[in-house]
Image 1 (cartoon, rainbow, N blue to C red):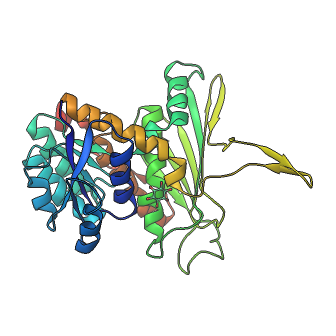
Image 2 (image 1 turned 135 degrees about the vertical axis):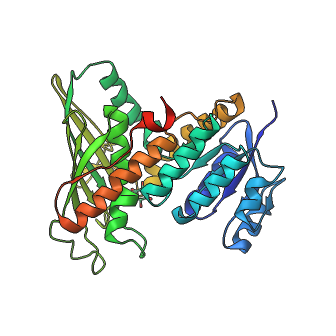
Image 3 (image 1 turned 90 degrees about the vertical axis):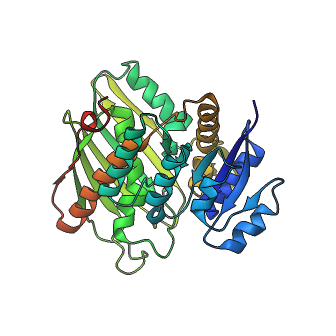
Length: 339
Ligand code: ISE
């Protein structure tokens, strides 16, 4: 079978990382087209990849005859148009989160895919492919903890880009715990409250950091999350599930533990999500490529999961403003897909 020819749209940090990954680690695929709003950046990158061209217009890149599938790493504001173009051309697409930037457009994308009668959209919630999350999911599925009741999460970044505002902590960072909750517990989140503790004096002026989020799920499970994105330390993501028969925790960064003079004991923490979830991204992209080549197109979270995350985050942003618990408003899945 010939290689899957991929167009990577958006070659900033995430997109460039995926281009390098496809070129060096992924079997059965190659990048044939790159695109970026910074045209020169795309051209410079294309020149380093055999058989690859830069195409200036993202919609032309999607439609190009040399492209079988699309990887979207463009800004979220452009996703709706680009996803609809992928659907129109029948091209499978791996879309980095968010699906789109608001609930109404995410729902529109879900509906348009459903109308096609086949799935084409996968959303890049990479934690579902991380070995530790997979082990935790297996433990839960096998019933080892009995009924899961409570989850405690920590999500810390050393720093965030200067344009990061308080609502982005919900939509860009907390969104991962939203997906993890839905993935591990297999149910929807029905309400969210975002509490604002005293802000980190080292955070940029006006940034509400840290934030504490509390989710309630459809069956009444409780999830709390500390999101703190300006710690100045490193990348820390921990998740503990407490069930009726014990608890389980992941993300302890227990790699190499070294003891050295004079009386030091310790190891290392990954500096950013690129290192912490590097292997998860490799698995995610390989499985997506395999799924597209086999005609299944999606092997992981899909458009519905992107829509559900958007709905929870919209309620989260409303709670960030009011400080009160906010109910998550979502249409039922059956009303769209009949599934
Ligand atoms: C970033 O976009 C990510 O997806 C990271 O996983 C998250 O930790 C970070 O806060 C986000 O900005």
